[in-house]
Image 1 (cartoon, rainbow, N blue to C red):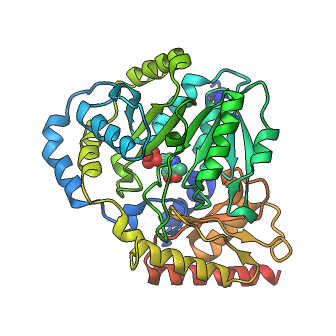
Image 2: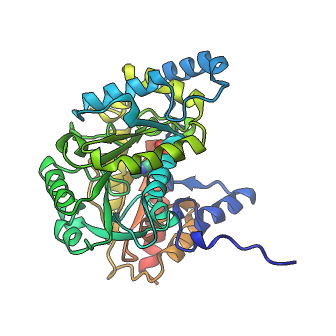
Image 3: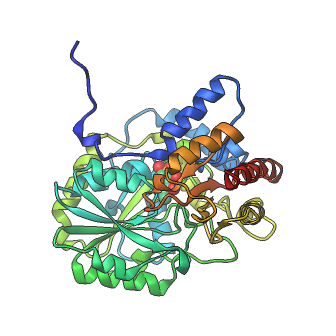
Amino acid sequence: MRPIHKSNKLAEVCYEIRGPVPEKARQMEEEGHKITKLNIGNLAVFGFDPPDEIVHDMMVNLPNAAGYTDSKGMFAPRKAVMHYTQGKNIRGVGIDDIYLGNGASELIVMAMNALLNTGDEVLVPAPDYPLWTAAVSLSGGTPVHYICDEQQDWYPDLADIRSKITSNTRAIVIINPNNPTGALYPVELLREIIEIARQNQLIIYADEIYDKVLYDEAQHVSIASLADDVLCVTFNGLSKNYRSCGYRSGWMVVSGEKSHAKDYIEGLNMLASMRLCANAPGQFAIQTALGGYQSIKDLVGPGGRLLKQRDLAHKLLTDIPGITCVKPKAALYMFPRLDPKVYPIVDDQQFAYELLAETKVLIVQGSGFNWINHDHFRVVFLPNTDDMTEAFGRIARFMESYRKR
Ligand code: PLP
């Protein structure tokens, strides 16, 4: 029979967080191994339950959630998102500028699909949350990576951004707070990025899904709140701030100067209608979440479980010879560096395979985040302190044996 190939559109698309190494982990589980999965920011499976009030309200509303909703989403949750954006000082956002989606993920792909033609370039951070690179490629565009500088708390390198702008550059993606590095950008840096966007007529796509997962009393500023004259599209949702990844509930807010973007917005509306609507139970969760006290605040504040785990994970990792790590100010991840003189890794996917085989711990190699060198990896700091000490102990022993090779 004629072989069935995947579409050429997928040639450049990859998503290693659920790629071949996790597939190997799945096979090992089938063989009876217990795998510690540090590859994905899935809060609920580590005992971070979603707030009771959200679960309750979704259950109560389930009988009302059987029909399709408006393709941008129901009025009340969109109104709640509108108030949320007002709380973050993003001005001029009306109900029509808000789109609800099956997680931010769906909307990221939608936003790229509505924009890009072959040859269009989008500036994406390296390292990035790899859905962004994948979504640009899938939409026929070309991701162009700008460097985030580990020596500068992983902040975007503005000179590198400027040097990569061409006549084909349409947009810049900012992930703040950042996955995988945990960086949180200061206002001055955001202003400089806006100035670059302004001068080069770029759309700013701001992924702010971790905007409440902040440590050490840090404050998050939405880039859209600083830029009334630049088109900004901001992404957020319940997955992380409200520990509800599985409810698939996210949103996208179009703000700033829109008068020249009518056609693009028509494209967004068309794609939103083609998928009919976001899942309705997940929409019902939004108003309750945004209106109440049940965010992640207690977990990240003084004495909070996530704060303790971040500190422990950082200590355990940086105690390993040859490993350094910028301490995250936000989000759920560490992106440690493996000194190439101590660990001369040529293929970091192979490194992840070997680590998995020997330790039964699943990490993601740095190249999975479009990082240029094979000298980083990402872990979540979600396991409780006992499980984390155990798993990181196994990693430390593996690294010791790696050094002796
Ligand atoms: N953006 C970033 C930076 C993420 O880390 C993730 C998930 O890990 C997403 C978006 C996807 O979020 P959602 O669950 O809303 O699709």
